[in-house]
Image 1 (tube, rainbow, N blue to C red):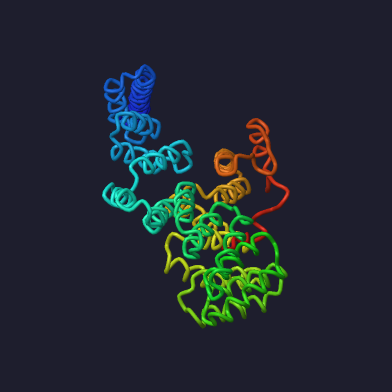
Image 2: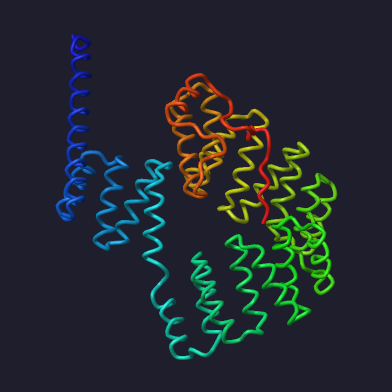
Length: 403
């Protein structure tokens, strides 16, 4: 007899779920409307009700986070945006608001204020401006940091230490010609400044000036034979010319000088992968992650190696790890994961991942991906199972991401 009631129980259960979803949606809709009218406390109450109806609604947490942000309750806002991201890792707007919230929270006020007060007390002391610049640089506020370095340089125009910090700021912003000029100025003042020569080499290398880069690297090592990272750049030059064994020799030398040189180990892993020495490449990347668990490129390359080996479940495991734990804005992980979903026939997830990849790419660069499709075209492509959506098939190569 119980079996006769089973379909009815299912139906009742489905009705209850539907009613709960309907209540949640009504609360969110009302909350959104109240928030637009700037009735923040009332909106907050409705978002809370929506979350009580469904604790896994990323939209409700995102909306409540926005209200908290407007009320200047930044810690609460950060918690809600983080929760929205946990529920939906590809929720780009939540990532942006989380970053904006952290930026507004900023560093501990006493640390920032201490440096500002130092400038007020000693406005003619260039080092007070440099210290604030370094502090801002660590917070990735590069433009403000560069402004402070320039203020310091106006006070002490011939200080190579100030020039060095300014040059690093230019490098981080991709202003390689400006970096080249300022590092040249620094080494003219101090011809034995090994850091100045090394960073000049980086600026030259970024511009593709290979011969000049080699000359400056040799000068760096002449001044300081133990400058481990100089050999890493030599390795990158060899790698670009596909001289794999030569590149490995350079990376080995870098690690002989400094066994903790993570960048040398990471680049050596790339060479191993390109030589199809996959087990060695995997071991090297895992060692990089052991030393730096947030090294997203190493994690990505592990996924890519498994992808090339057609071990798709392992590849998916690593792409998931990047998207959910290491760097939710690592666009290439979504792109490669979309390819695997497409190959497996899960077009809905493939479509979602490719759209996430597209949005992050545009957010980072201001440009659409290399091949642009509108949403209807993308959906149609996935429905017919497309193995790749760009000219290059990314799962057939490892992406070289140097310093």
